[in-house]
Image 1: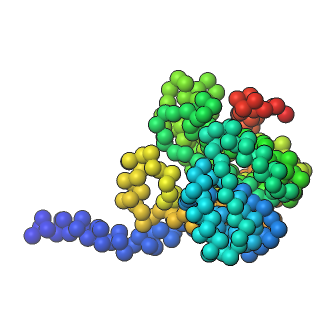
Image 2: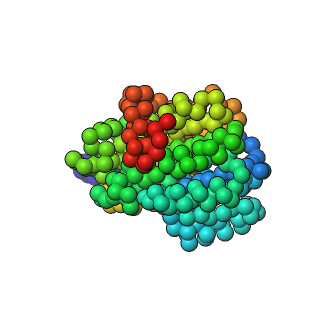
Image 3: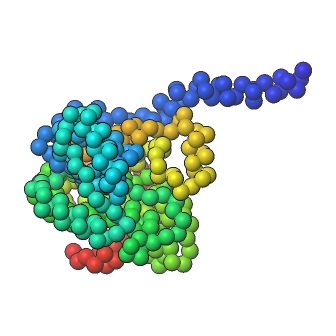
Length: 318
């Protein structure tokens, strides 16, 4: 009898978690974009918009009347999503274009075609990314995490920067992560040449996203282009497909994890909310300014990373 009484809390734990989960989840998923700003006549690009946070972000921008480009590696999936968004929003200005961030030729081709097609660009959301990949390289020989998550978006933004400036006021939103706290920029091992950890490689690339945001802000002061980095929260998405352990954890704790729609809120907040210009260069989480690590505030590292990135991509440093 005593043994049964001791086991009773453990037996009741699943039931307690089931009942408490919705309340706990609400506490952990705060942050909703309440802006009612409409975007008729505005042009937006969302990378990785065929799934997850990118899809939800693109859908909301389309709902507000923007002309939205879904920049996707998988065009077929992108077309299905575009059809879905058009049906849900009634906005027929949802376009799919091929963009493979693991190939600089694809990035340059996307930018060239977009610039020939559009006169303006008001919102660029660098959303796509990879996470915990086994060691592999992009088409240009860059380690996959730093190549896609940082260098790919760095190049894309660079190629579209003049159009963003011509269309000012305009905004750039870079998706980062709380994981940046574990990140370090080791210039002697930027490509994982000397040692490699899939988990840490992701963290390093997310730190690079914030450093890029801060340096881009510094260079764009007074241009009318503002830039923000975002932690979307812990979101149920395809990003963890390379990690069996993470997939299991996501399944076990699914009650406490944000949906893609919830995860898109801070990106939307930074993309559309009025009066954020004075907060350009800042990092956001749950639709408010968030603290970043000391590494992410290192201006010297941010400037050097910019120069190294330009060198790797064959871009002029200034």
